[in-house]
Image (cartoon, rainbow, N blue to C red; front, side):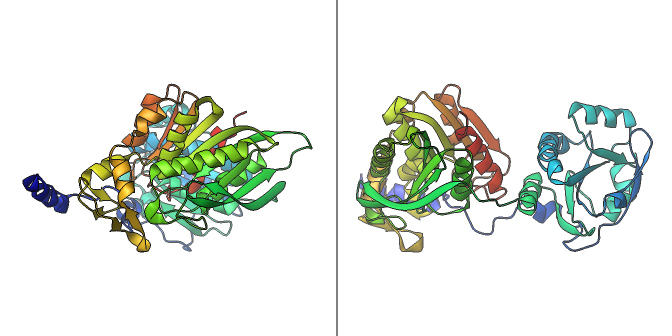
Length: 433
């Protein structure tokens, strides 16, 4: 055993931190958008022909927000991105945003077939020349497609990017109209597994005696109930007649308990305590669960234990990797001997990971427990997640028949590329009547 321990220690020194989301991670713009016009630059006017031979001039749209989408029907990445751009057009054109597609096709037949295939409804223009021979590619610094620009009402560049999700995030922030939401928001405390839990309830405006669904939101390892992702989901639910409660797990945020005493099983107990509380409220008709990261694991296991008492479940980047991390002896980049863990392992932010967390995570029946749930479910995960590989989210899709799965290309663990997209997918699933 001693020799095995020595070998294990050497292996741990060489281990790659699976759960570490390194700061400063760059995206594709750092490589492919370097020559695009910078923010504040005047967008050059251009005059190009549409597929039917008519002339279109960009300046005719001055006074409106304009998206310029550089693409080609022969471009694999453009074909992959086309449905996303069309979806954005359908969302933002009604908010006054104009879209123009600039194609680098050389054959008008192939170009028009591509337009028809993807159902592109907005204006299309082209020089019908090879990509790097076009004047427009030089004028706009386009060396990679797809590339996109957002132009403001004064004709200046707001954003140049090769990432449609970054474009959508910017459009959402520019066109959002913050309206008061009917209902109320209340801070409460309730009993958890390790003391009192601090929680926020958002309740829509409902008639006396009426009832509505309630969603319980569960945050991740080292997180809190606060944050943009949960804010967006809870506000959307409230605006659509659904209540929500989010709380700090034991040892987190404003709740009682020590972080060192936190384990996934006692977070499941916290979630069940919250379920007991909200299910007894006179205005609650049904209860749903939504969890991010470790909160996604807790949501899945809680759903497995409560079964049909839970009507719907959403998992956002569920961190089922935590069991494998414990077996490897590497949690959030902190390494230890998993067969003989210390009393605690120092982590970021002066947190201490307790021995019981490691010991329980080592043999945690995550998927086995979650599989007992057979209700409506949705999993949202990004391919750019370096904390939890998206394959862990895919496995939930395998064990839950009929589970909806959204794999977001390039999105990281916190969905920072476009948090609005992740929140919208989660909210719409929970809002299904």
